[in-house]
Length: 151
Image (cartoon, rainbow, N blue to C red; front, side, top):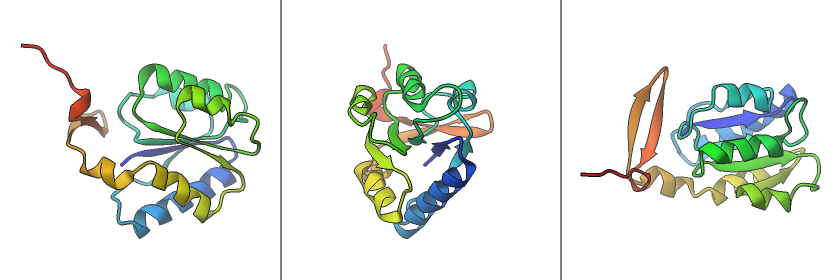
């Protein structure tokens, strides 16, 4: 399970990453340490569809904001979970446009993060039939129902 945290406030990003790691450990879900990105541009520069299962995304950031970042993610990847983490409910309704899984208001608590991750149905994701494809310094999980082939 690969998770990204995109937030320009390093302290908030590290706190959230710790809360995510605690949840994964408590629920015995195998996951890499969440990768932290300081902004949407940095994340999108190396983004490859299918690499991340969950993306936690701040909305108010320097440069491209989180909503614009989410729209670009959705152009390439429709299956990853996007969870917004922000200081305001201003974009809560707009989050439906990019099919966000959850919307958290900062400061986050372990209980809130747990509710957001519960919504992702992680146990079911881990049990879905998939294959891991080796790629440059990573593995990409492809769900079998997303793969099509022709004869």
